[in-house]
Length: 308
Length: 308
Image 1 (cartoon, helix red, strand yellow):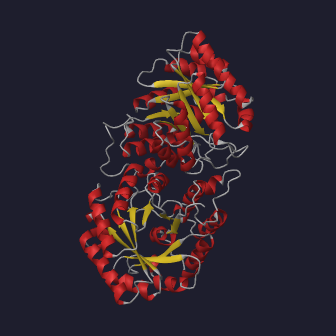
Image 2 (cartoon, chains in turn red, blue):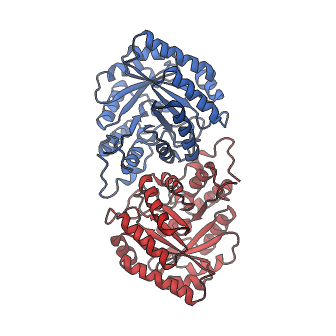
Image 3 (cartoon, chains in turn yellow, brown):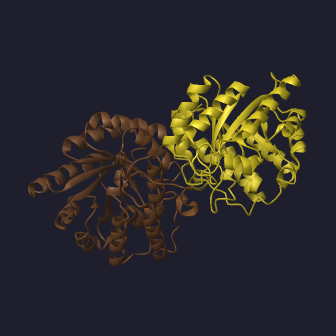
């Protein structure tokens, strides 16, 4: 039997956060349903941030309420503080993802608090989950942004990233994700850092979040797979981009990543043809965005059949 | 000290063979000199095929004569039969690359002979090299095309590829390259097949030739590196494409591959800035071609410095 790999669709969150066209709530729910139907294991459907910070997510409560009725996949949301976590808990989500930045400079710019203060905030979120009696019902993921380098401060020490991983594991995270927020990671560092993290977290699942800014996204997935990682973020059509890296692409492309995993013999549960149809539909909603993807261009290899 | 990886620039050969604009000989030599100056370890500068088959290479003898004067890198050419090998020997090249197709269907379509007949032809080339007293002066590489699958016949048996590798090693090849001619390879198969080949060839160097048709090119480089491969083909700007795969890209992109290797700590001898300048110049010569490349779009990471 093929080994399972979980793909999380983050196009609705990471992908849309820099898209100027604000999609209406019904379209977002439609995308979410389509992603579930195509077999994605988890959908990060929105982000609980103040509407004045990212207008795209002004409807976060409505999206979360809408997806409560979607069955067949884990549906989650990103939160950046305790207030956001409370909104996510209130919406009835069963998975909530928090993020802390390993780069001090990025943490201050992105979350307006130091890395240590952001780690303290995670403790508050874990305590709030317990206080609300949700510890058995709501999984808490935590991402470590800029784990592989930072556009603001450059190098991020690997020892610092591993120390953060240890602290998050002790704090009660149910999943820890190392994120290459700006596309600085390379396969050697990816493998080293995930192997280091695996030695710290034991059986706690690790996840990887890569951007394809410098074309190494799928090579980094390959390296993370070698280090034992079995959970990956990806964005339909590679949607997204970073305002600090002109011409950069966004997250790794969901279709291409799903194809690679299937070709390697992993079971992802994903229907590639359905995924490509979903991509086509969403492309019509966002005509001004640049969609990436080799599979959409070249099609599947002759006679290709994914693992069961 | 960083471990060495050799990159071979094949843009002048694989890249140009489907480009309708015929570059004049002086431009080709200019490109070749630029690639040597940027630190590429080997340049495959032309292909000795009949001019009526690929008009782009009508000047193969002139290009070969012109590059005889270029110092600082190995300069090679592709040949598809004994006649081509004789022309390459006559031109004074010190490296000649032959290719045989593992797919019977591709061999018949591409070389108009069966795979076994193509292997027999390699024996004739090795014998001709010996007869001319060139065995110590001219290296013979041999590529195994469609090693990872074929657009015509689909699946190519791994056992067949490994049997061909064994035969080429016994025949006297100085380098054996597994080529993913149509972009069907995935990291799992790449690693498995190169590990299998390494077990057969002993200390004989293995090389890898990947196309990025389905976006897995650099992931496959990562997998081949894990299997011990230290020689790779790449094409400036990812130039090229396959007439049988509409919308497909060509070879893996030289700049992105060189960046990945440098980021991983390998020594390639390549000056990335010089390479990007060369790409810009060649792009002006071929305005109708689609150049790929994330590095050209996003630039180097902040504070990036390659291995010495």
